[in-house]
Image (cartoon, rainbow, N blue to C red; front, side, top):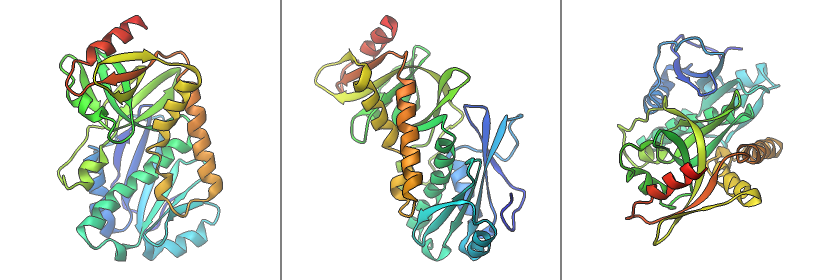
Length: 301
């Protein structure tokens, strides 16, 4: 299935599950939005190897919306009132995004338009049921992947930025988690607030991928420690950080049935991935050497 007026310029983002997401502008006026999104995610225009599957996103304008809707009445439609509309096929392998360009004249709105492309991308990932967004810092501790989950202002970003070598920070606010071939993989995603807060040169390296060895859930504390958790407490905390960045809240016109379906996917995903992993509540000060407690927890597991 192709959107109207398509050209041949795709930007490509290889994914941790050996698929590849590709996006292109179908209206030349949308090309700057797509190019900026691609730059933030460090996407290239060269086909990366031989992916097992392509997921495609076509970005167009409201000028072509009604004709597209009439030709494809079977597609799932969502969006945000008269600002933008997103269509998905039932497999979530293809998305089609339409912008009302009259609403995106200012620099602020154009920045939001770039960010909104990420909504189509995220829902395509979640709709396939082997993936979920995670509100977290993604790090490696002595080469072993660790997720530090936490909602806004929990201190996870500050902690991640304080990690000394040989530990490494792959992302400080957002990652995608994938179940793939019996492994749990995490892929770095952009910290979109950097862009919306005015850093117009911001870029993230979304090629960074690690296998997840453990999960931590961040709590600020005067002292540094890790307390093991499991069972329903682990699932509840995992579900919270997965649901926290799920973009359904900004899509005011999403069908309730689709919203419930996506949230159920996330909850089921949370229950699966906590099994067999050491999981700890990380009580961390913002001045101490909290990474030592993380190392000890990983070594004990």
